[in-house]
Image (cartoon, rainbow, N blue to C red; front, side):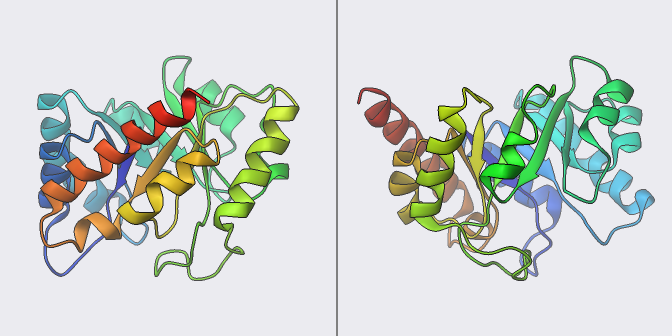
Length: 213
């Protein structure tokens, strides 16, 4: 699976970014606007909700639990300083997608037994959006973390995130993660639609290849 995370750029509006990712076949969008007011966030969401609906794509908000409920989107992604996932589940209900940020195996183990749908594990490498808040994980780190949590029968889907490009996908998927999140690599490519399509192909190929092992 591929999650596209929006990020303000000088080249495209957020709606244009989402439209291109959807045209490339992405079915999972995270609207992330950390510095926006609730009203600015709402106005952007109103632009992209119809696009996601038309493409039958999932849409989750970064944080903004109240807005996610107000606008009836599929769910939220919660960072470490956002609402507690247990409270979010209680507030939003059983059908809502709830994802959480993780940087270590201990973070993922902390979700054991919780009604969380996936974790975004990163950063793979430093990015302008992460600003070195957590140590990079790298390929060896992903492999070690996946092995550690799976050994404890924690089957929570793990999505790799943080500065990932197409050239990284095969090796990252080989570590046992379940999906990839991308942002800048897509936005900054010469053809975001084609780049998204190629990323999805590589994810699917890698998932099939390593599933057979």
